[in-house]
Length: 282
Image 1 (cartoon, rainbow, N blue to C red):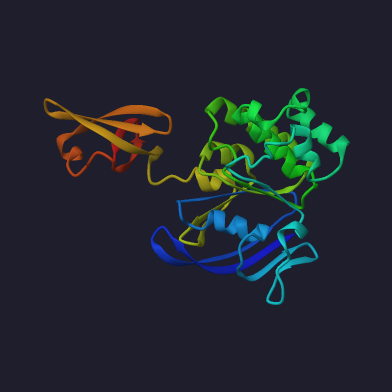
Image 2: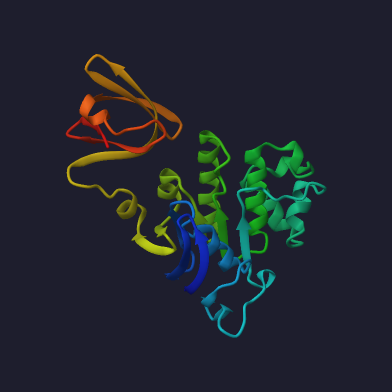
């Protein structure tokens, strides 16, 4: 069991706030951290890695990584960290990047084989695509057989098809190595596909904690679905208005009455939802 009970004062999206998190995580589970920007997700990851200080305790099984008396250095914590940036050594081959962490050629070969990179092991990172480099970063993070794998939006820079492919590889690696994993993500489909538990942070505090289905599929009243997007344009056509909304990588048009269009401005973050199959905007 991993037990986390920490506090830290930090500057969030709405000014000074306190990050205060108390969590118990089963070993071998996959936890997704989500929430608005500036809510403390990445800071929590960095505290777990030992890259930032905090008050409180972090216990991994019988080991104490943080308490009032000490804070174990990052290199002594047996963690793997996958950043948004690939952070690979450009002067080393793919295989050398992995062996730099641990001189275990058999494990390196196995990881490269699972991620379909074995044939590229003598190439340098600069010759690989973004998806291939991210796979190398994931393999490298697993080379020391970490007790805790931390991932900070590892697939955010990739296109949809590559994200899906790497998600499948992450699932395979997680099932094989059974490494306790904590991942920061804003992508509901990614969270639903990968995680067994979702923790939502807002202003430094946990506001939701449960399975992906219970947290992500919450509805209100008779709503059938709801998506958040950005209002790009409002076109006036006779007595109606047409709103052009960006939702993820798609643009949608929603017909509004003049009353519904009042008070909306280009650039607003809005919610597109449906009730009884009649789209409404709010």
